[in-house]
Image (cartoon, rainbow, N blue to C red; front, side, top):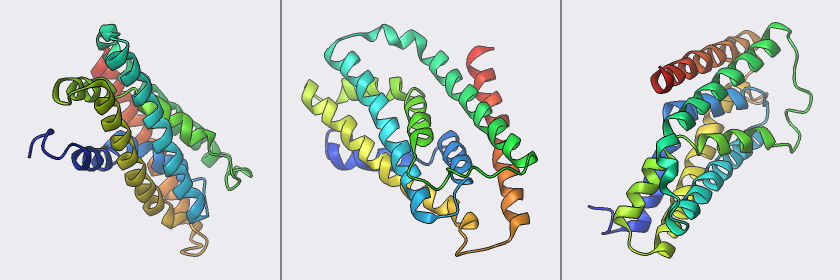
Length: 204
């Protein structure tokens, strides 16, 4: 099945799978460790997907409609920015862990962190995705619609992932504080390590 046979179905499937890439899962997994409510964690996943889609659609507009292809030379730097973001997320969460401070606003309807992380994550890999669409999908409108459907798929994928990752932190599932704190520490160290790897791969 090529991209032209079933473009919308393909876009949704690719978007869904894209949400499960390692850097995406590490970032959202780290974010939802602040939650003890499944629905808030799921909303984090939704807002991540919306932020991710916003960036990809904006770059799509600039590259597909505006023909601003000079961005191609900067995609390695964009990837590095994502790596730096993962490192920052890890250290911030580690600081909360060692100080034993709970974010008292974590379970309020504030999802700017997840949306902002999604915005930055949209930088990583967006170039290759948009260039693929530009070469395989005919017409500017169809190309942009493809990116939107891709975004919907990524939202669905990430809300599912966020919900799963939040389960050990739900009060309804477990009150094991040692398990929860251990997972916070593991999540933070993975973010820092993988973020450093991304920076090294793209800048060194």
